[in-house]
Image 1 (cartoon, helix red, strand yellow):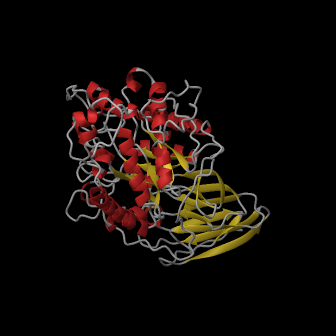
Image 2 (cartoon, one colour):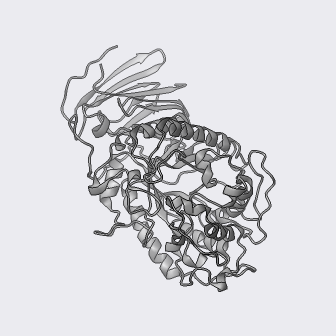
Image 3 (cartoon, one colour):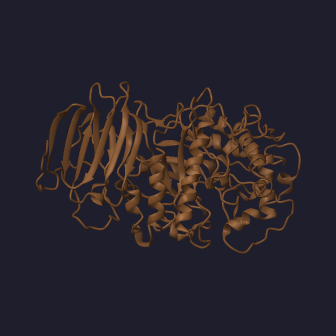
Amino acid sequence: MRRTCSQLGARAGYTALAVGALGLLVASCGGASDAAAGQPLPTRASPLKTPSGSGAVNGFLHSPGGPFIYDAGGRVVFLHGVDAVYKRPPYELYPAPGKRWNFDARDASLLARLGFNVVRLGMTWKGLEPGTAPANDPAICARGAPGDPGQFNQRVLDAYLARLARTVAILGRYHIYTLLDMHQDVYNEAFDGEGAPNWAVCTNGIKIGEPPGRWSANYATRAAGTAYGHFWRNDVVGDLQGEYDRVWAAVAAYFRTNPWVVGYDPFNEPFSRSLVTSGDEQFDAQLECFYTGTAHVGRPAHGGPSFSCPSQDPAAGVIPQILAADPSHLVFYEPDIFGRRGAPNFVGPMDFPNLVFNVHIYCSYRSGKTGNPTNLSACAAQEAASLARRAEDRLDLSTPEQPGGPAWFVSEYGATSSVSLLESITAAQWRHLVGSAYWSWRYYGDPTGSAAEALVGPGGTLRSTARVLAATYPEAVAGRPTSVVFDPASGAFSLRYRPTAQVRGPTVIFVPVRIHYPDGYCARVLGGRVTSAPGAGLLLVTNANGARSVNVAVSAGHCR
């Protein structure tokens, strides 16, 4: 049956129904609600109103095993968003008009209009526990049995978290989750990075130099390697890991009941100099011991050598400490830093609930100044291979708590102004049915990045890469997804899934009407029916009784 939608008003449209042999076929023809064809991307947006009963995702999410994250109704949830990290004092983003670290409702509103439902929001150990002792303080850095370094200040931590909570609340008002990310790069400012407080820097007196080239050259210095080594071995009297875990437990306890916190990222891009000199197996053992603690360490992945934890590591590592303080939220743990380029991951299965295997995808063919690709095809191929390798890794991480392995998520990728590269990696992510967060939202004078990475440029204007990221995508699926495809050039989108009878709530698809469908869109469904209004920004699909599969297709323009 063929139907034609005439050119109607901004909020007009119609729905044509037909019954086919394979199920209910619905063509919903909607008009654009707030823009004409050819209008540039919005730089500001009004608050997003989520209608009651829309089925939009909210509340605590969980990872029971298998590749997907689920909501309370049993729907598969795809997290799709950006990173927002401020790496200089005050080491967090919050409403502060006129300040460089300002993050307010204008940011959240624009994020929502672009369809993002998660922000990986940065915080730092130094912001939470700055302390007063200097680097290389003998009272902290001397070898010996770990003890309290005397740097924790509850008042300082509470003030920091209260500001962070304001940002979480702003995002939540726009139905955007927050993934709290304990960010670090090259450990501390002494190495042109950020993350650890000064008092936690122990270099054995090795001079901190300034190597030529990009900031990342600091990773290979003896001084940085020594500071990292003391943290991973926890072999100084300042109890570096124990204090780090203590702070994380305080963060988790603070946000324990917050439904707009999706979870916690314990350590950004774990690094050790042994990765450069000895290979991943040695460090990944230390990393798993840091995550689990000596009382919970398991077996390595991919047949790596058995784990032997540093003798002074805490018995309960950072993951059990977080889960003890907050058993309801997800923990997004990362492999070592070179996992972003497809190197083997030897961090093995960890038998805890609600874990998410959290990976970064970048290529090595990048400019030392901007981070943009120097060889586009080689970069795209390497990123696709890295993503495929991480998908294989996930399957090797099955535990009794998470049969089939943990869910997974790409919490960093992109960092580029190359539309072609972004199209390649986002298409690969949808092929693997994995959610992601783009690096990064804005450029805040990042000491370990460049302005080329930011989605929002100077003056609040969006880069052309926003057309790739502002995708039509499924926020929640009432069944098991088998295919997601989106073409940012044409706006063509398709979703296939096997419906699950026990699931509560409709399938919810975000449709960026203003950006990709200025003349409206046509939604066709096989095995279900559209229940949202024509032209809606959230396309709702209800499964047909007895359907074995559901196919949804969205195309630009009116149905013909």
